Length: 145
Image 1 (tube, rainbow, N blue to C red):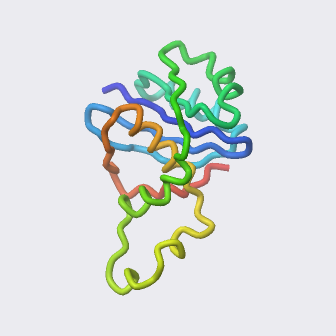
Image 2 (image 1 turned 30 degrees about the horizontal axis):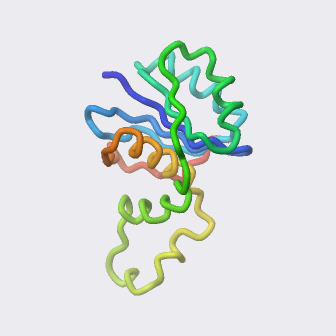
Image 3 (image 1 turned 60 degrees about the vertical axis):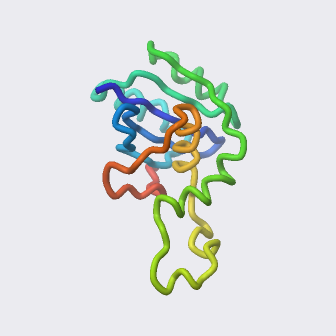
């Protein structure tokens, strides 16, 4: 089945999601240094059937698009306004707080957490107009350095 990549571009790091639209599932969600993005997508493109890449229209999106010129299928630029802000709420939808932790303010659980991959997920969900589920226990804060 064809998969899609969603990217939340940034100057030093990018959020990255690999998902299957028909299954509504996320297979991979990571954060990687911006300079590693092109090589990572190239390698993934060799082993996965990727139908399109969706890139947020924010910081450095123009540079990312130029780096993806090797990808001969559809590249879509999509609105990413407020995705970082919305990622905080989506984090708790994906990873609900339970037990006594519910008594602690939610903000404490996401201090110093990188939410770029969740921002990439929100870009994908906004584009597809559906919510995605996680295929496995994915850590959205995983860094590829």
